[in-house]
Image (cartoon, rainbow, N blue to C red; front, side, top):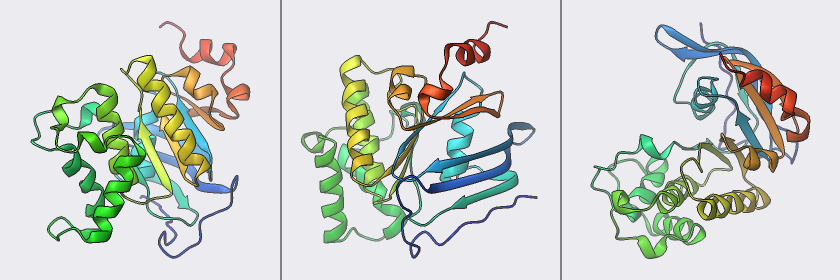
Length: 247
């Protein structure tokens, strides 16, 4: 039986820097017939950058899905401390190129959770969308089709959609995978700015350089948490060699 405790995101005050923004305790989760996460216990600090690191199949994306509320737990506890509901930015490949959406329409989707699918956007909603697009430098792409964009441009649009949700908790799944070095550096800098401005950021990543620049790190292997702490404490040569050792 799933056990989930969720504080009222909209009314509770946001937690202080360094205090737990999310707590998971003895958490199990997965998909029908395929368990992934097993007995996972961890904390996500507020107003910080936390990275989820591990090989393919380690459970990074599943954990993000649980934190985002799109994957249900099968056991354990999930607690949020204040703030607003999380904004989730999936991998670029999860958003179809064939969808006939412009950049602006894509970012406007970030307002659906508050406004609803069929209600017209208000002047305030449009201001929020404009601000998010300006922040990520994609306002000049407003009329372009999403499928026409480069990888870096598209990722910035998806992050803009997340910002348009006006959440203080941003979850990103592999935000820089497949991008060129310049695009990776630009997105990394933007995420650092968001943390400085009061957003708690959690990202799954294979980019060890980006991971080492984070505030906190959760190292996963085979659905279990094998280490947690600062990147210096967690991403040691011995630990990485152990979980990425050849079969």
